[in-house]
Length: 412
Image (cartoon, rainbow, N blue to C red; front, side, top):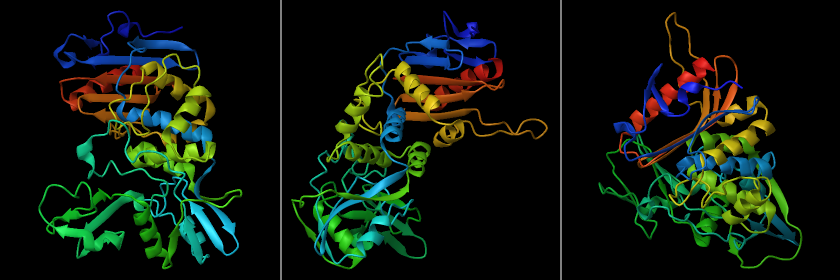
């Protein structure tokens, strides 16, 4: 088995340039914690291994586990709505589908269906989870990346405000709740009162507070008909309407590191497994079945990786990446992961081919990258490289990691 001896033993983790090394006691890694695992899945060979069984804060690398869960549980199209018909009334429940009138997807499958019915009763009792994940930062309530979770999300659970020739807000249900101000905050913490600087030309995206009444009002506004709320459902089997292609949601989640999509996909998955929308149902199912052979069981508390309570090992990340590699055709798998290295122009105007298909994860003083590396010889390697608690700038960490990956690409 071929090994890259340059990085074994002392294992300097990173190459500052070819044929030179940076040791773990260098200033760059002073007071930081690093772990790496690189394997050749074809030869079943380990190229690099340092602290791979130790636990790290993964940040958005958590979404790799969410992707794996959704691919194993969800059908090819996202369940958009479930309902029971009784006489002239239709009783509806959300599935957790995040795409309904979402600013990017703009899916209207459920709306088109509901427009055909006059008497609609909304039941939200299947959502049995918290609006926020454990350990999410309380001060991020108005940040675009932390919308609330719920069973029937609409518009991505955010208010989007555009200011070009005139101000346009979506949904316009909140128009009368927008106050023009130069305050730094974008919304009151405990109410749907929003703040927008009239001089701004940026598109502002702010989470709104969800509730049964807000969901009801949003539906009534777009359907132009009354919606009733009920705490009970009639007996009977639930019918399911299916919406957009699941892969389109996975790709958006992975490429944009979209926290809302990640959280909702775990809820949608739990709804397939049970009558309840709850993160823990999907998590426990996947850990106890497909991932029961993980050597280091993760502390997995949310779908997105926003929480610092999450703890995963590089070995667990590589295990899941390997399972995806075995399950999915390469042409599908690589489209789901972002290309980390942007193509570069070399001498002779030769374009550098993408070689890293990987998910990054960033929190303050933490940066992780896990995915697939294509070598110049055409081999596919699977890796997880986790960096926690560094005092250096993340740009320097990323630069050194890039040297490390380039060396493997060019020499293996």
